[in-house]
Image 1 (tube, one colour):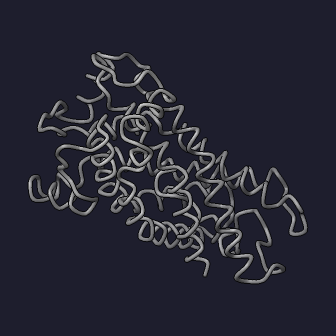
Image 2 (image 1 turned 135 degrees about the vertical axis):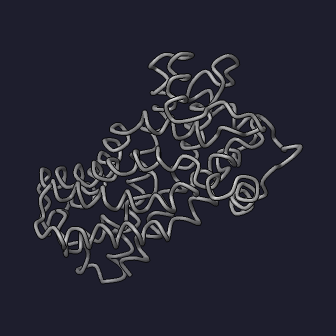
Length: 308
């Protein structure tokens, strides 16, 4: 039931956060010479006006499909790493989270590639006159047929650089916050504290690796329309800085931070409620501090979504 709750909680997080992610990707990859959007809220308004509300949910199938596998990987790796390390310390939480983040990239990278391509498809059109991809699976199959495994894993290095410290910071921040808040089993504010800790940990995680995410999005969007601009990660960084300055690394940051808190809040609330009802009201979460074999460690491991 813990694993099922984690998957459902992650799905709730995706549903809440995907519109913000669509806005983030559009802002990250738009042309500096002919920008379509002036900022986060203008991007929201433009997508809804030009593509309807469903435009914000383009590409949602990909993170939904990868959710179960990513939760399974994160749960298994983080739990086993904590048991191997033997002591529940903030540093061990960071190391366990980093290990989980690194290994789940195998699923995360292709999933985000398909998501990015679908989010950019039909930009500014209410009904796309020509859809290149029918869905996430069709997108990956077409990329594989055209570019092979290398194409499907486009952006893998940047995903690894982002996810490894990103997951580490998430687990570390969550552990530090829950310890600092001092949750007790009979604390009536335990769930709000968990939600606050999860949301703030998500924000901390994104802030720690956001510049890498900008480069990842640009590399994964490169080639849309048959035009390739970047030959490598270094070339992407060099061209982006030369054309747009160092502020390019904050493109879409507002929508990302707006997304980070509610996504984690929705995830933790869903997981907590499912576990409380499945085990009985008196058998809910007993401790909001992370422990390698305790209930809260399992809750936290499963609750964390695929891209913070």
